[in-house]
Amino acid sequence: MIITIDGPAASGKSTVSRSLAHDLHFFYINSGLLFRACAYILVHNKQVKFGQLPDLSREKLLALIDFGQLEYFFDGQEQIRYAGENITYDLRADIIAQAASVASTNQALRDLILVFERQIAADRNIVVDGRDTGSVVFPQAEVKIYLTASVDVRSKRWQLDQEKRGNKLTFDQARAEITERDTRDKNREHAPLRVSEHAHMIDSSKKMTKEVVDEIKLLVGAQKFDCVI
Image 1: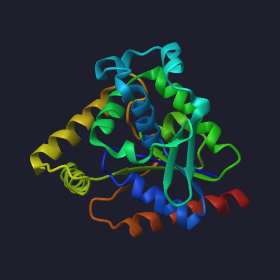
Image 2: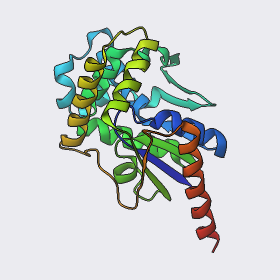
Image 3: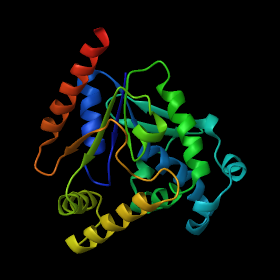
């Protein structure tokens, strides 16, 4: 079974997906972390400048990123190794998050990561989150969720998350960044953020993680029942 959870930044996708995967004993794919990993590899040691990220060709990307050396693991927490080195911690830096957001507008990179995600998902029950996992990456998914929340709630979550990482932001700064990301995600030329066909929309503004997870588990249970029938 494939469960996709799409939605805007700071809507709670990763937290919900990780918890859901744990409860269902599914494998979790954090697509955002894969984009961060590729962005990290590209900008590490100043291989590529930020301004070049959207326009790199498939050939150039394959010359800079050896996908055969890229490994994704999940054992309750996500880990990524590249060329045998665990780079997971480095991917949490805000500068890498910014680079990943810019790199995600590159269709050639999106196509390469799509192939990588499908390889990971082969012969597994998975929960995967992102911006277009239900509409583009896994359109055949049995359960599709669009998880959202109000801009103010997401901005506060982003502000608190950044504080945990040692980045002090005012609420207005956090709101401006969330708004900028929303605009970029919704208006990008390739695979823009949208509610995929047959997706169940869940607003997490006033819900705890467990409430959202339980709501999705009910949908999964109904889907399993339908499959049996």
